[in-house]
Image (cartoon, rainbow, N blue to C red):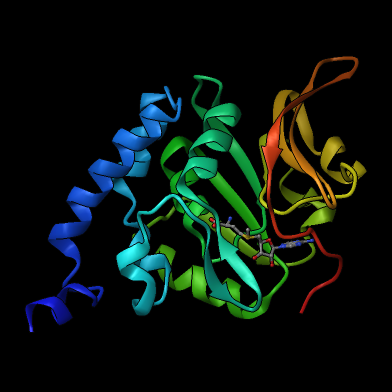
Length: 222
Ligand code: SAM
């Protein structure tokens, strides 16, 4: 009976606190240094974002399936992208492209004043909305749209994070970045590299960071 209990979302409570602490130890070992990001990752219960059958694996450093051929990103990549985006500063307005189940969105809600997140698959928008409501993330707005176009009504953003791999950096996203803003985006098809784009008053500076593996950024909505 006790073992069964641990595999349910309600029963995982005590263990998840400890496993989350172990996740933070591992993230530090993997090189994550931003204490604000680590604190946010420690606060967000990743197991509520996955199906019950997977909740015992929720704190492993792996991407897990969330349905519709999509995944929840691995904790390391969520931490790394958030750390790069933050660059040690409080973020004001952030755009996330690719909400998925809303885990990265929830982490962003702890490090930014306002988070706009766009997802192209409607049932995932509904799923994420439920998770973010459970966690009372009141500074988040979700939109069902093709995020390659950004969200011009809310631009400019001081941070843009894209959680699906683009074949190229969409022009609309570049245009919606504020001066001094940062975009983190995986670029590539068979091999992908995480890119950092910094917008200056006159230009964009693009830096290649590290190899990554994401589902593709697709056009249109479903
Ligand atoms: N941010 C998620 C997390 O916290 O785990 C990861 C999401 S998953 C790796 C990538 C998501 O991007 C998928 O849900 C996919 O449907 C979405 N996506 C792909 N292309 C998109 C587009 N053009 N606009 C919006 N969402 C898109």
